[in-house]
Amino acid sequence: MPESRPEIVFAIPQDAETLTQLQIDFGDEFDEPEPPFEVLLPRFRRFLADPAGFALLARQDGTAVGYAVVALRPAIYNEGGHVATLDELYVRPALRSQGIGAVLLAGAVEESRRRDAGEMHINVDSGDVDARRFYERHGFRNSLPGVDEPVLWYFAEWDSD
Figure 1 (spheres, rainbow, N blue to C red):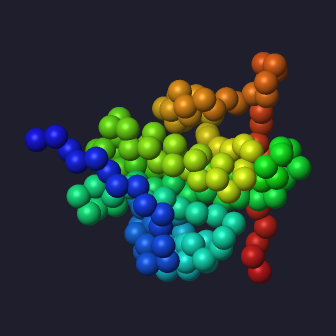
Figure 2: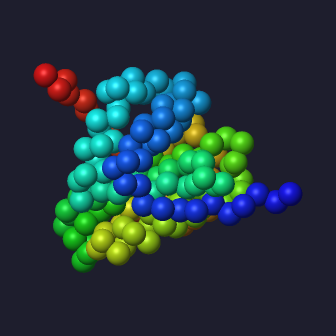
């Protein structure tokens, strides 16, 4: 029996618990522990209430099977005036290679463009070859046009105290 096509919807505040659990599952799968549920849940609630971002949920037969989280920020780099960052894109392992990730990514790009983002940034671990191939297959690259050297991403964390 063929699988039903996933439904892609905008996450609403009531979906915060579902997104939190998906995020924790994502971290567990890649052995990158996430904060505990009770810490992450208010962060998702805050995120979903902020117009500077959005989340998409993929549901199949009423069950959440994947998600995408996108943050938008003002920028001077393009005419649209915004840059979108795909913070997370996850599909449950048993359902990969069925096009769900591609549909989530296309929805994230479409909504980002609708919100005047002129480009999208995605951070991928260099060793995550599957994710790199996925994004490259969908037109993303890790170098600027006309340049062969990869773009590097740097970060610093601060205590929230």
